[in-house]
Length: 519
Picture 1 (cartoon, rainbow, N blue to C red):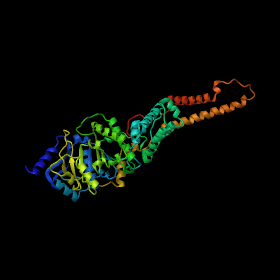
Picture 2: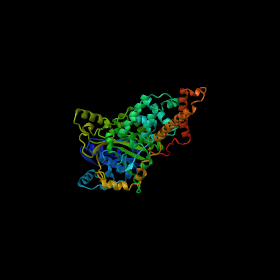
Picture 3: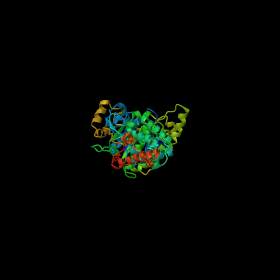
Picture 4: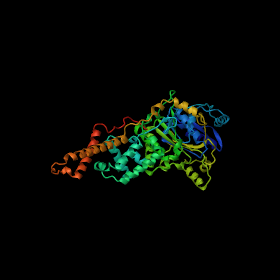
């Protein structure tokens, strides 16, 4: 058997699947497409996560479009993190052209037909689209501690803050609530809380407060609040049965990596907490694509990385797959990289000695093959070409194949402002999440309690001053233990605590937000 016949047989055996699948492209050997060697992707193992890597301009974005189109057509909902703002073209049909026709003829595939995907635009800011929010309460103390990079002692204080707010019925909805409670814990309320939960160092609360302010400066105030986004809205089907492609445009996140990490970890944690255990489904429930994935990891603390690694390992059993898109595989931490079953590697560039070393390391991430010199091929791949390996339906890695990718059928460009406005106006979710709610929460409740305590203190002092003229000329009365100023001050403190307790018992201390949601 010739080399080309052996190669063709290997591809046909390695990339033919019994279950539902869709084509990615055709196999290439020695610079030419091998006739009839279509490289398919099986839906059954798409929840095993994946990596799309390559230098700028090598075709990563078009690969993302191609994958989203195939998944949507197979009734799999898709969530895309659009950092560069160039994925909105999925909502419009593409335009035929000579380059597309030439590629289709080279691959030997069926005629190219333009297609628009059902798309929902999401946003973390005031840009057009469905507004995503989450409450501090839904994140919880452990997740907030991971995001803020707190140590063990600081994490304990954060847990105490959440416990205090829960006991006092003061909902933590946004970062302003958290800031106000931390100010109270480190100031006037410290003795009260120490009596209930143990000693609290003012320097500890001060450090936590500074980290929360840093998150606010990166735009956290716009992210935390109500109404919270329900993750079920990410897994919707269009009327024609195709999966909805939700595109979260986060172009402003490039200079705010901490907020982006916060969002991603919160989203993954909420999906894992609320979705039932499914195992390996024939088709996944949701596929998530994270463009410019290095932004998640570049400022992540070791604790945050550990949390991400744990969630990524476990979330595939919920039917959710995560695909990271970045320039170099080395951008992804090794423990997470080892969890990625599908790898689509576009060309890398070798301009420096460090680049050449990185390419050799990248080549070692792929299965050994007798048909390619991988480290050399990585610098010679053309635009829209990639090295591909994945897990077959038995969970076994497929042979590494140089693949000429199919062109996307949606627009390879962005929507205009008018088209975006039209798409947003047609959305049923925009109005559901558009208006922010300012429910009574810890900030308002705590301020009201402090004002009430001050009012009562002033009334008490005024009453004492009014009694003084009336008592002149009377015989001095015998001193009581309650005339001692220390005892009187202790009584005032006890009265203040009692007042707060009564307010909580009467339901004036706020309540927990009911219902489930992400943001």
